[in-house]
Length: 181
Image (tube, rainbow, N blue to C red):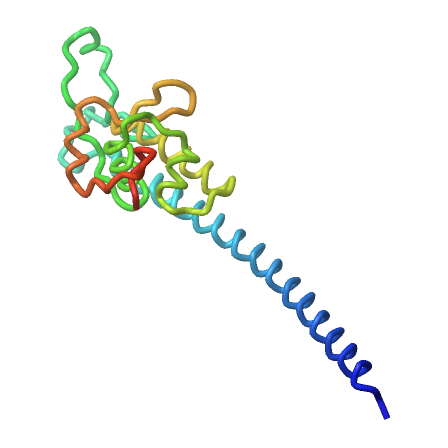
């Protein structure tokens, strides 16, 4: 007859093996989730780029010979050479949706410039390299589009003349002055 301690040892070993197997499966699922999130991020950026390229295409009512200069980021924020030196006329900025809009609202309501990692954290995204790099690309695109400025390498702030945008859903702030999302 098997003693109770022997049965307990077998049951404990079986539970330990089950925990090890479940842990291995969790790690595998986390890797798959990270891969899926990176793919989703790349697809999202690709959609934004294609939408911008489509918006920058020549208007249907343009006269022949008046072809619009296609710029990968639209023409917002660019001054034609013949107008250089003149007072800057506010450019029409591309519409914002999704994470681009969230980032602009966040920076419009922030008292100081933020880095891409800070924006990712404040928006409740996972603080991983793919998310941070994707956000950095978005922020740089928002600089080109005229929504943001990059005060120094990697520090992003709302562009002048955009702060009225903060009224569209500015979040409450934390003790550190960062918005709560």
